[in-house]
Structure formats: structure tokens, C-alpha cells
Length: 287
Image 1 (cartoon, rainbow, N blue to C red):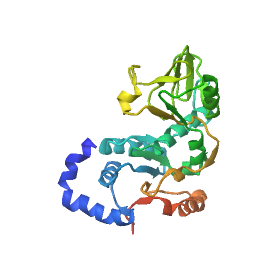
Image 2: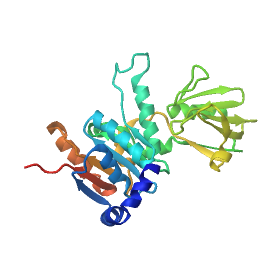
Image 3: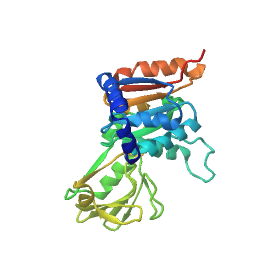
Image 4: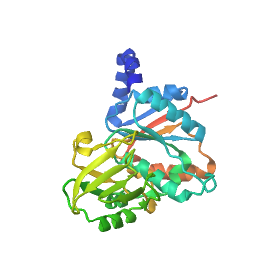
């Protein structure tokens, strides 16, 4: 948010107040001729946010990348792209389906989290199936300090949630390994691996890693004595828009929808429009 603060002061009366007066009562806003990617992101980042989740729709992959870059610059809010691989996109021998499952669950976990989050999506990818929210919640594992944990049963639950045992000590997202009384896991909803230290089938401590591989106690880092492990792979039966709540926002950014997708797209939005807020960016009409 640092980039926006100084500029927000310049527009405190004529810009921010007007946006809030228009946006807050209805939760919907339409802007015409917003300009380039940076100016769109600037206008958007002036809106009140809180812990709001945002799905920002673009037409092409190039637009997706430009929007992502601008939101990161102006907003200071965690922002990701939804970029699914196709078979053959990787040069090395890795299951693309597995990579996509973890990729999707990583982003869904952030949509289900407590912090503000932006997800930039090509509109065509709205038609892809993703896990249902209730299925994600049912496979979410909560681990607490001083709680009993039987390793074999725990591993069975991890496997049901799509986790795989790692071939070595270098963990990828969605993998785990056991070393003596220590279980290391890289949950899809964490940026780095976590470590469960066991003693007589009880969780003695939970540690979180950082970019340098240094582990610190979860209580010291978060003030909590427990963590949630979101599933790494869940059967896809739902739509990603179902993860937006009534305070969350869908952004339609000058979409140019191909005829073959037009009816399907309109039906998709129509069926869910009352469940979230809408911010529409449209081009100026040309003569």
C-alpha cells in the first residue's frame, strides 16, 4: 500500500470521497475510459478494501500479466495469476495435472484466507472446474500443539487430501517427509514448509520456515498454537467464483468475449451476480 498513500492524499476530496460515495452503498461500480493498466489499478486501489478478495478478469494472457504487475505496484496486496499448464508446457518429466491441482489449491487457499487478495484470471479460465468450497473445508487438516497425533493415521489423511511423500528432503508444495520424530510438510497454503515435532504421538511444537530455511515456532510467529493444512488436490466440481463472498469483488476489465463463449459467460455471471460485488471497466464508446 506504500505506493498509493501519497497519491491518495492528493485526491482525498475529489477522488477518494467520490469513489467511496458511489461504491459503498451498492457495492457496484462502472468506470469508462480508465486508461492504461497502471491507471486502472490506481483507481481500483483507491477503493475501500479491508480483507476483501478480488478476482480480476482479463481477455488475454498479456493483459493478465500487465494487470498483475500494476496491482502489485499500486496496491501492496498479495496478487497472483491463475495460469494453468497444458500438457507439453514443461520440458521435464512432471505430471501437469498434479502441478495444476497444486497451483489451483494454492490460490483457492488464499481466497479462503483472512487477508486481502487479488487473483488475476483470463475470462476463459472461469469455465474450468475447480474444487468445491465444502470439499476443501472437509479435507482441511487442523494441527494443534499438545494435541495427540498418530503418524500413520495422519499420513493417511494427508494422502486423502492429495499430499505425496517427497523423494528427498527438498520439499515441493503438496509434499511431506518424516524424519524420526519430525514431520515436514509443505502445505499449499504456506509460502514455505512447516515442521511438526512429535513426542510420544503428541505434537510438542509446530515450526514455520522462512526463505532462508530458518524454522521458528508458530506461536512466536502468529500468536496461535495451531495451523491449518489445506488439501493439495481435490476433485474439481465447482467454479472459482463461488469462493467470492458478498463483500468480495469481481472486476471485468474491458473484456472482449468471443462469440463462442458469450452465452456461457453471461449465464455464469448472471447466476452468481448477487453473491459478490462488481467493478466493471469499460472502454469509451466509439462513434
